[in-house]
Image (tube, rainbow, N blue to C red; front, side, top):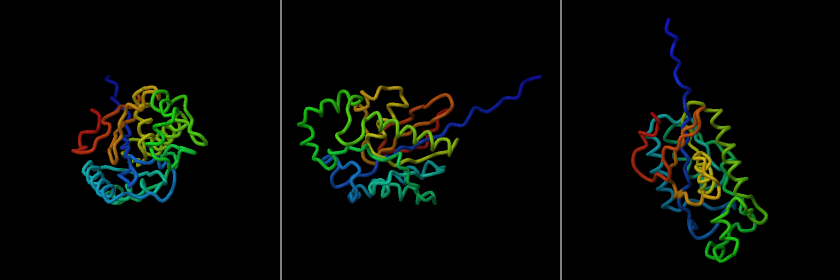
Length: 216
């Protein structure tokens, strides 16, 4: 007698969305400072990302970093699916400590900047977080949300460095190489998690359909 066939465990699809453009994007390291909102272009990006995600169909939950620019990006995404965004501190930007609010052109002149780019695993921001701590926090948040929405589709609106770190972890890439990953404003990165491990479906997607994201 043939044994009954069991369906493989369902994967959980995470859509990791970086917040949209702000007035200081590419100029300042804003970190966790409050009061930074989306620029008009960032609001338009958020609406476009919401439309792209809505076309995918199923979305079970939308989570956001507590910072204003992330919440403002998450709002239209959640609205299109009739959901309320939930705040999760695990999705926060890296804590840049004393570097928070400093112009990038000034930071690039510091001798420590080379370490940030080439050996981030060895660096801790003065008075702030290390990159390895940031990665652990982000991955832990994804694991927790995955357990809460097994087999579903989860949108997480976060920031460039945490998303880069999550991608590196999913690909089995050392954190020292995570700076080679590009995460643009309002880009969508998709990772499917199953008991067999994560599958990176797309990284830094800024246009086009998301309809084919589910792994075969």
